[in-house]
Length: 295
Image (cartoon, helix red, strand yellow):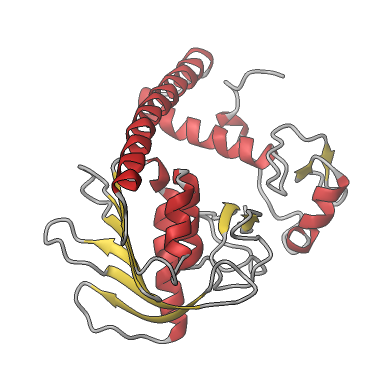
């Protein structure tokens, strides 16, 4: 498939904002690669998406408020996961640094990216101008293209690993009152309980789906994860390609007879991307679909 970044339209962060202005990613970061016409994957979009999906609006507002909030700090702690580093955000005035933390040494910027926020009188959020990057203690610098790629790398890590569903997350800003701290602590406690419930539900769903595959297919036990992954990929292929959320669309592209849409509006909106690869996609092999329930 060909990833196309689409943004949520929020009151603070409109989807129509230009590149380098933080926006909330709705969908479209694809492990198979991005469509060449897709909006770029940027660092500020990843941080905005993380805070939006965590669900604590005040934290996002404080990050963006360079005039009223001097400092802002965030750290996503990835627990015992040895290969996944903690993610951090530090803002000091209009200077922002995002990146990964080496948990063994506590050192920042493994890798890190720096931006300067340029206020915009027409928007609540300013433009994040890429400045430099560093990796594992190397000097800060780098060509603008490389700085942008490194910022996109932070966003991909946030997206692929769903870091908004990680606990705990540390958030603080300058001038926090005791009421602010109490409110945030209460939110995080409730959030942790919801995440535990969500994780239990997802495990139960995985178990149920693997049981279905085991009962109705001739797959070895060690292949169940692969089969499940391919079936979910098939489900994604069969959903509305405009990423509107419809999982059982009835319309098909008249040319390739494969890509599906739920409405003419969705198809027209996606055509600028789909026309470049229409007819080139391969369906998931039937061997992986034998245990799918019939509709």
